[in-house]
Length: 167
Image (tube, rainbow, N blue to C red):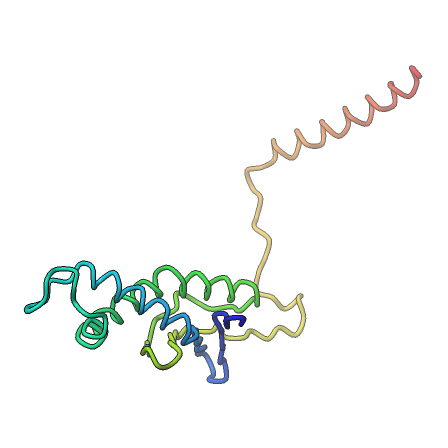
């Protein structure tokens, strides 16, 4: 059975705001949670149990909130941000500034959803390029550079003439 991959949904319908939703499949969340619970079971020193002999069901129930909080941090730092930035770059989505994390929804019985919000740039409408407000800078103190450029082009052209005459 093929596992689902991380999914992206970009919603840029609101003017000036872009919401990005990153969805991690439930199967991946469950596998990671089971592994984290097993690691916690080996390290757990709960009252009434020997160290390392705490039942896995007990760990999954009593430490669920802590494990899920750590999983949110790990997924955010190591999977979600990199994958989201790569998706934005591939699809050439233009966002001004940095994305801000607005919501995280994660539980073992559903897909995890990370929601980000970014600001879109305002569109600039230009009718003709001649109407742009940019002007060339005034070149007052560059006369000697211009003269050097003219001399070098004269030398190159005369050198080419001599080289043709030799051959």
